[in-house]
Amino acid sequence: MNRKPRPTGDECRSSLTAVGDALYVIGGKWKLKVIIALSEGCTRFNEIQRAVEGISARVLSNELKELELNGFVKREVHTEIPVVVEYTLTDYCDTLGDVLEALAAWGHMHRDKIRQERHLQTAEA
Image (cartoon, rainbow, N blue to C red; front, side, top):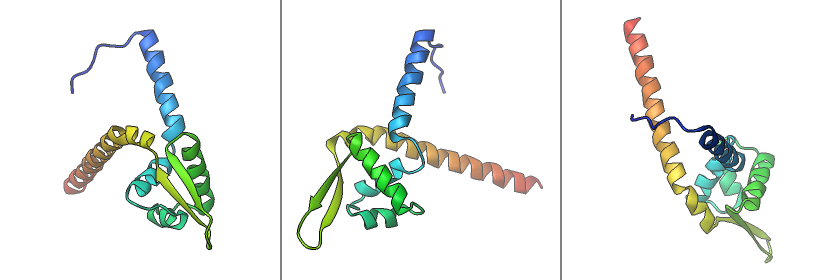
């Protein structure tokens, strides 16, 4: 991997601020998983909860509210009986496409690296 020249103090502070802002909005254990579940077609609360293994209803509710607040999710209430609430991704959420792809690629690479290291350790033992 080719390393870039060292950033200046101002560039470093700017990057730290930008990464901090990004992590504030999409960080945590659940937000990106909820976005992925929505992108795979889950639109109702219970569908999302089933798709995102291990998330509680309370946490999912809070995550959806925060994602809506930050412009990634739209909440639509259909008032017919029974009342149906659906969640959809906004166009703004598309801006996360490259981020999600890069995280998924890195996650696969890291998992393979750890597996290889464990395999080598057990082979040496």
